[in-house]
Image 1 (tube, one colour):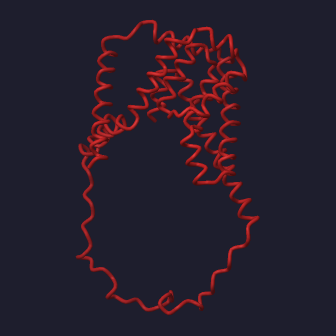
Image 2 (cartoon, helix red, strand yellow; image 1 turned 30 degrees about the vertical axis):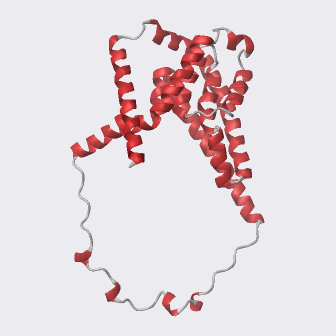
Image 3 (tube, helix red, strand yellow; image 1 turned 135 degrees about the horizontal axis):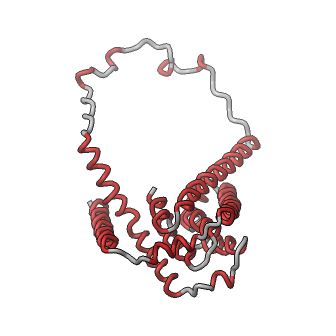
Length: 270
């Protein structure tokens, strides 16, 4: 949910809706592909041995053996049931997670993404993407190739995608970067390969590549059909400049990220 909120703040509402839809479709297709591969491997492997009949069980395993009351726990020895937390306690837990624990987990990645986005905005020429990649399928292939080796999470990828979109990257290519970037980084691919095997990793990677490219094309079609220019939304957010309230919110966010990271380090050290 944190990446969805950041997407709305840095991109536009339509992208906020399309991003989780693309992620869900990609995940379902990848899961179905891996499941089909597993069923195929099970069918081609040797049959599993038949379990022994019930009569072959030992006496200690007999399901019809008489019940021994001495083995049952006494009711007065059972621990009391946990008390139900009050509304104030629930509110405190929710606020602590949302404003401290969550920011401690994602804060460093968010700041890395903001730094990368600032570098893109400062050093990349405005017409570089349009002149080199143009529109259509080529920008999506380029961002997909960039996403594969790039180690970036969902939170950090959002400000980078916003900066690239402001420089002329198509909405479909931005969607490819937002979904494929976190899913195909080297760490995710390594863990997936170790847990599921190389064949499942190939199916997983193929599902991500195919689904993100198809959904990216659909996103471009929707934006063109509705006549929406993502750079207009970004320029509108930047035209008025940051207000005093936004400066205060930024300082508060940095303070909460610092405190959340400090508490996370103390928890790991304990």
